Image (cartoon, rainbow, N blue to C red; front, side, top):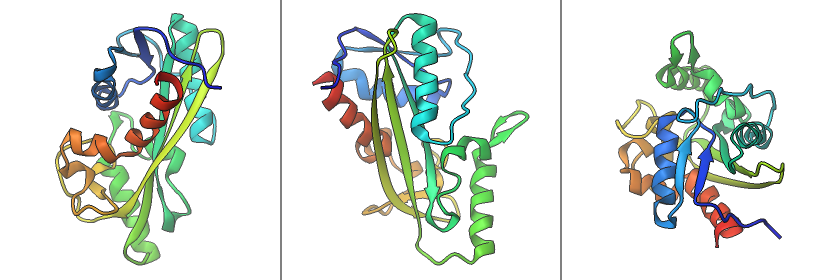
Length: 203
């Protein structure tokens, strides 16, 4: 039996403004205020695990412990079939530069690796998202979601964040970066995992 969420505020353990905005939109109908980690001046904990679940747990528990609030975290990334699932849990690391994250660089690296391998088209990939909801007493609930699709090159679209301009979900002719927030939020890996979170802890 999953634990139900009964508070009016939830801390989203992320410093990513795009992710925070996405989650605030998803929570809007539920009368729950979503607060970001930056607003609470929380440091980013080191993500030392090799799985999405492991890293999401680190972030959620660190935030819940530091603030005494229930904290939600997600760890997400893109897994490319021809690259044996890379970058996967290291998606953000592929974008790291001394001046912050550069996803154009990460997407270019991904494309170049696929070209070197002469990977056949369609180049299959999936976005994965794991959400962990942790309480200050140490209890947590874990949910996993995904969306499958193919990688495109050249990049298309100006919206979204991360690998969105490169990812075309199955059944659609647009990339995530060509879709409105509402369109993407209805089919994304985060929408999938969020629906499971709602069913488990909010319904």
